Image 1 (cartoon, rainbow, N blue to C red):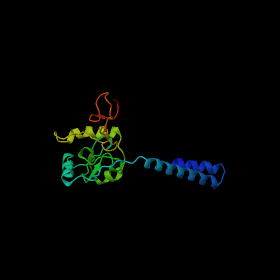
Image 2 (image 1 turned 90 degrees about the horizontal axis):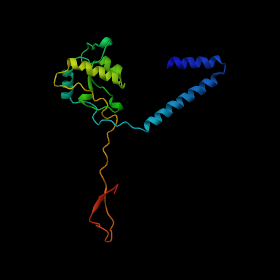
Image 3 (image 1 turned 30 degrees about the vertical axis):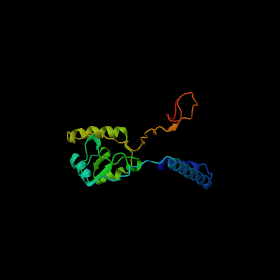
Image 4 (image 1 turned 120 degrees about the vertical axis):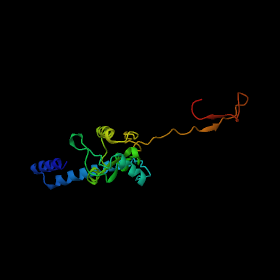
Length: 182
């Protein structure tokens, strides 16, 4: 990205249009960034009310990971560092759930370098595949990484309203019908 901006600036300067056009381009880019932030704010992320796991759940998850970092290395090997941090696989700030199914044990280096990065489906697949080797047999290796990111909305309960009097053409007010199709 920085190289592209540098290339754009050099191209504009080579046209001898002056600093005015560079300022115009920068203002347009800043305006686009502001517009993107405004559009994102229209769709709020539904966050889990819990931010961290309890001490017992955290210790259990470290134990099931063998007290080692679960992050990958090249050629499909795990990191040899000790498990120091508990990390949301799908970030909490992006709507990830605070649960054991969305938890991974990481060393300090890998957790701080990951940040709030949303993992790819390929990363999830690789993590689940690696976990089959070291998780206890009674633990699920499945990652429920999208819990909370897409809110599951149950349909509203049907609204029951009284039927108007029929004046001898059937039942009267005592019968209630659900709203909708009749």
